[in-house]
Image 1 (cartoon, rainbow, N blue to C red):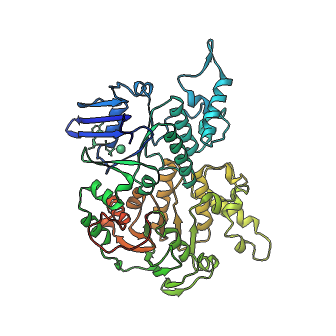
Image 2 (image 1 turned 90 degrees about the vertical axis):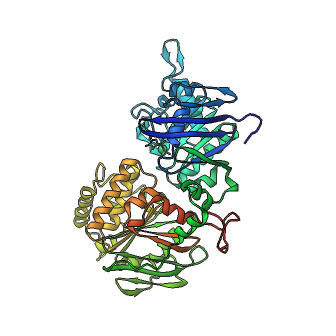
Image 3 (image 1 turned 45 degrees about the vertical axis):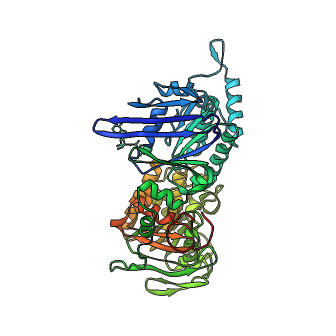
Length: 518
Ligand code: ADP
Ligand code: MG
């Protein structure tokens, strides 16, 4: 933090709602050019604190100083004029207006009485190009992905010459590459001396991009630290109001649980493929969604690849429907009823220039073309059935898949596997990079499929998705299974606690396990 003159100082902030003390003597300090993480459990008071800062709520008590000046914004517009912009998770712009209009909504450049379209478009283009976003700024905003829309919201914020930009869970609907772009933008803002407040539950991201962190609990600010001075374990412990040792123990609750009797589709024991995957064990039964959690580098995707035969096992064993299996390639796994939707929809999943029909039946083609000629009638029948069954929004089977929204592309990929009638489907980040509505739809679809007997192994970085969408969650850390949480034990906090343990000088007990953070 720039000690000379902090950009923002909020002190002694108290706020009550009828019957609820939402904030009690809370504080927040952000330096110029500082990226500041604001974390806490649901209900800790983060949003209320931000809304007080941005004039959406009035405080009962406390002071807010911006660059040394005491301020009291009565509305978000007033805060914006004062240099504070907020970007919410749900993009709050006007879909049918052009990208450029959205950047300048309410303060369009004018020549006399008229909007200066040319200047507006050029300026919008310039702002977006700074962030590496090249789009036709005259097209409606709604024709672009949520990620682009979010970038437009940020460009808008920047065009206000903001001194402080607040991002409330900005990454929840972005895919990995889009997150990287956003981080690039954040670093640019930082370079320009802009302060950024970043609200996120993703520990990886906080450590990747933030300089300092404020931790809130029950309406109070419980700690403020440099990001590099606090271990993940301590961060989570502070957030939950527990001792580090307690969080560590909860994270370690004995693995080696055996599930209730039922048909076990997949039983993986002590899988090892290399340094990234040392010892992973899990099982999946019919009709069950098993979540697989872990931080970046914990070995989640490697576990999926090992099960699917994409990487060779150097240790451990795999049983499918009770019989030993050793896949030399994905083809072997597919033949045993396993499907795998990989994480990177754009590079490994869809083939952009091919049609919905071709993409959907890609894995089925060998079966459809037994004699070397594709059975077109049967192909058409299958494609139509899945488009209807999964509610895929497309102009028709001949439409190029790249023209579909992310959510609908993802459904085509699901259909690609479902038309093979798998018993077990492995999904790596099934809802990453798609909007909130499509997300809910895919989650609903998965639980329906599970009710019909499909076994699902779901890798996800979304704690909420894991806690609410899984029957059990297996947690990996540094290439090893460390915990399994049953339905009764399943909360976002417990998943996070299990993921967060890392060797740290601040940890009280336990032998260091070696290996780097993250
Ligand atoms: P967070 O963003 O950290 O999840 P919030 O600031 O949303 O937490 O909520 C803090 C507390 O204030 C919670 O107990 C919440 O229920 C309460 N609260 C927030 N907004 C309102 C409101 N408009 N009316 C009543 N209670 C509210
Ligand atoms: Mg909130």
